[in-house]
Amino acid sequence: MMKSAQKQEQVQDQPEAALGTKHVRLLLVDDNAQHTEAMHKILLLHDDIELFHCSDSSQALNVASDVQPTVIMQAMVMSGTNGLDLVKAFREQEALADVPIVVIYSKDDEPDTKEAIFSAGADDCLIKLSGEVETIARIRYHSRACTEHRELQDA
Image 1 (cartoon, rainbow, N blue to C red):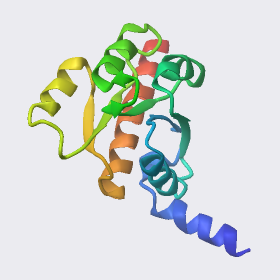
Image 2 (tube, one colour):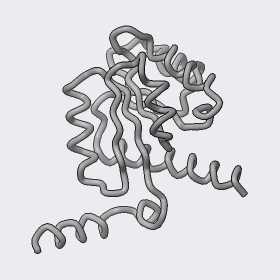
Image 3 (cartoon, rainbow, N blue to C red):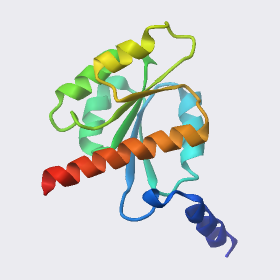
Image 4 (cartoon, rainbow, N blue to C red):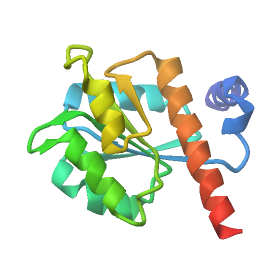
């Protein structure tokens, strides 16, 4: 009984755009266990967001093809790959070319990091462990744009 009341409160607190038929399919590509766990805890509170995780950047393209995300959030720095190269690889895949990509970077990264992220083809970037409100808002915004773009293409 208590669980459903809490769930109803959660739904009422979510923006109207997140309710309805729009469903977020988020692929998180990050090999940092601490950051992944923090994101998981945040996303557990949001029923409209379905989280898929890939810790191996070499498998990210295959996982993304299988999952068909409405938004990809990926780390800038991962072992075995450069985050910018991964953004470019996503953009080269026809089925993934229009999926919004949000790159997570450290505030300690080089000053020209943002420019490089956008030049590689990313749609947005966030400082690692940004606040929950900003993170969720950006995920929903980009997912909604992807869903609407797909609906227009199908029409």
